[in-house]
Image (cartoon, rainbow over all chains, first blue to last red; front, side, top):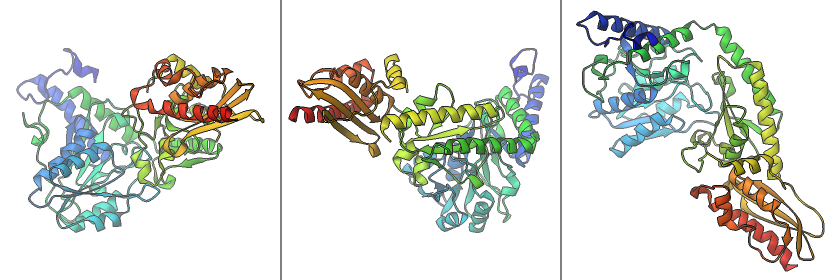
Length: 372
Length: 121
């Protein structure tokens, strides 16, 4: 990445084909494109650079909605999607589209049959995430894609920001039309991502998905995302995806063992509830609710020693219960008193022990103060 | 969420947390756990004097800290049902953000219920 930021390095504009500096930068961009594509089972030409998964989600949702608006104005998504999907859908609703938001079961699973049942004659887009960012549950994208393919008109967009490096991702095999990716979830730089745009046409040999571009300028990225490509950022993303692709399977097994050790320690408290189906979730996420403690106090009590997220969306002074956990049927109190633990490459046995000890101390103290 | 130094100290140490027992102990509570805030005070009162106070709270750090401070500073003549320091003073002392000041009224209600119970005796 640093090589692209100095005059001595590959400082050229990758879109400038009129000089060697541009060619050199362009070659780095194409290498990164191939690295990302290889990691997720896509063709390099299917990779469209964006500023991150949020932009990729917006491009996919608005792009499909606008391109196919004469054929239909109905979208299917899930209540547990990331805000970067829910908010664009809400904006389209404001503009006159109809949106069906599927409710997951109590384990966080959206069943393919639910998607099939929700499809209407004018459904143009289904947007379902691969791995949920709060609870780690993996959806059966392949079966959902089959339901969309049978429908004919409906295109499938998958937010896979949380998937790469945690669970196998094969864009072609999954059968999605569009897939959003993020670099920083795979230890890459922040501020870069990609949208995979299928050129296959899916299982039923449909015409490849089409998008209306949201920004215009130099025609970069097949005309779908105008603007000079941030060479250093995409180089970082390419390397991050290359490292994810070549990581040994034993790493995921190691993290799965750590996660179960963490859960076992937390469960010893009693009054602890695991959120999401552990049998079909990525090993890197553990989400648990703690009975008898208030959410903000729980987070404040542990934050000095461990870095975790709460189940609340702390977007203002007043916290809101997690809409994901509420969609699973958790009540407001348990939705608020949850912690999301993220495990990764650098997580060690002693980190788990510290987390368990810290949370047990905090929950025990707060329960005592609350008389629970 | 940011907390001032006093809030952090009282939240982390929670002095005077717990319950009291005995014939001269008066209890009052307010709020609702299901709604996110619940506070209880126990006051040990004899001869019109508060000799000890304890609190329990299912609440945010601001509310726990303010309740702890109230219980710690509760000793003295029981001449009124008003909260020691008052809601405005607590709000400023613990830098409670405007959106959360309603929670101080729950502390006020819990104190009034406990003190009122002792005064009625």
